[in-house]
Image 1 (cartoon, rainbow, N blue to C red):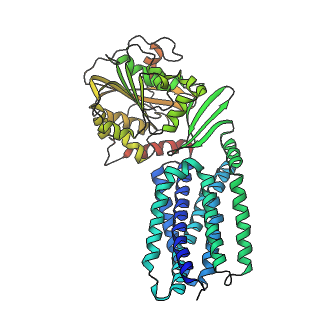
Image 2: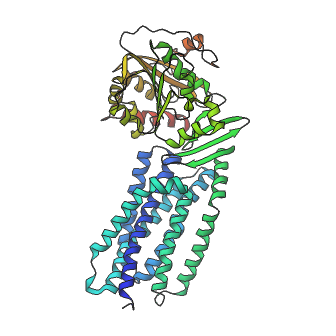
Length: 502
């Protein structure tokens, strides 16, 4: 029996809590990296959770063949510290170097899952050895589940925004190595010198990687974007990267370009001005999305705008484009205008719970590439939005590419047609390709176009007329309706883009 069974028992239960936190953090990091690099967060989180839990089951089964539970537990911690700690770093590196994600990500995830599956059975055996008849397996499970709760709460609120993916993985790798180190000291007479040397080497490697994680992350970003990185930060919701090249500024969210100052007018002017010109009144305007303030800039060109409410989920984005002078200059200081109210919350919930009515609603939302985004393109959401519009209120949404994903584009149009008379149109934006929009008008409203504001760089009455003409490959087609209970839109979106680029 160990000479200090009470202290050792307390430590091992605390270690159960710590390793549970670290294990779930690795799982969340892998899922976030996967959704960042591969897209479709719902699918990627589902795949990662399934693979990780299955690998844990394998680890739990393999634990019966580990003869020495103390040595086995320490070695598992060393493996987790190295593999789990570097999984994000290695995945980003292989993606930047060879555009390979699956092998390092899922290979590392399986290894982490197997090692995590070893932990609880081995800890239970150690506790039983030192605690004799007082040991209860329920104690181990209680601490394990509590650790999972702490990790799930801390990851989006504290860990990801403050550390980022690479540094977070390495920091929790050191945490696993810390558990291994204390366990080595407590059971120093039972563990050989080879394990101690392996532990010391792992600490040097992971600690060194953590110290250099800042420059390494910057180098990887430069390799991924091949432009000058002006800003790179992880918010609670997404990776925000701003680049500059030949005087042009570009915004990337989770690796996807959002605008390029060289051609953003070709997107934002068609998004905003046809709806503003159509509306009989423009006193109260709603923008959903558009945290960069570009759409707000276009709205404020119109006289008579008294109030503009901008609802965007991520306060990090709206804060950057409101508070940084160089970025606020891109939107002409629109987010600083006293008429503008910024609300950082989920658009679906805000529309459902709000009471104010608007004359124009402009939906500058992310593409419907997964279920969580597809809900913003459903009959149910459009029905809620119609209740927030005045009797002659007009709405418009960006609707993806009628060239690259035509089925998805016309699903959006068919879905909107349940609430409004629709006007589909498109604009060529070099950064995106042919891009589409759908405007919704109250039933029977006569289609008109008032004089456009001065200072536009792209949109003219002639351009507007041409924008409503579709060729046979992009033109109208029979399309399903997107609902909360049946989401044909994300699949149509993925299938369309995959047919062109995969």
